[in-house]
Image (tube, rainbow, N blue to C red):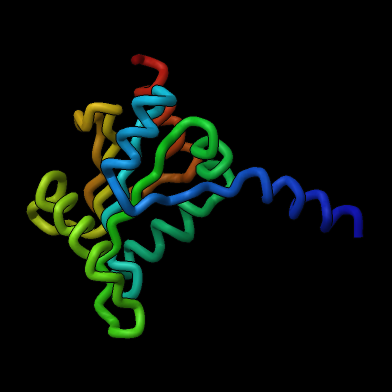
Length: 144
């Protein structure tokens, strides 16, 4: 039983928060000097988006890295009626897409600095391990 409790206990500390408001994310990034990772997703219809979330963005390697080093923003565009977002959240997501994803790519993930300057992007499913994905972010973060 102790073995089960320890991983769950460690997992509690690695919980990451995905914001839905980019302006709040930039405020936090400016205050904490963190980079911002924006993920454009179709959570209920885009297979590669679902795969990226499960295999990379919810992987311990990513969450353990991100929890103290990144501000995370998810711009979701669900299609099923039961998953529809509030009008306010939909507008926030659309505004963010107008700025960073005008071609409507899914999944599309970008790393920006606290001023919104794009440092790296991943167009489609990042066909790499979570560790390699984190290493790419760390290399950029370390070079700043």
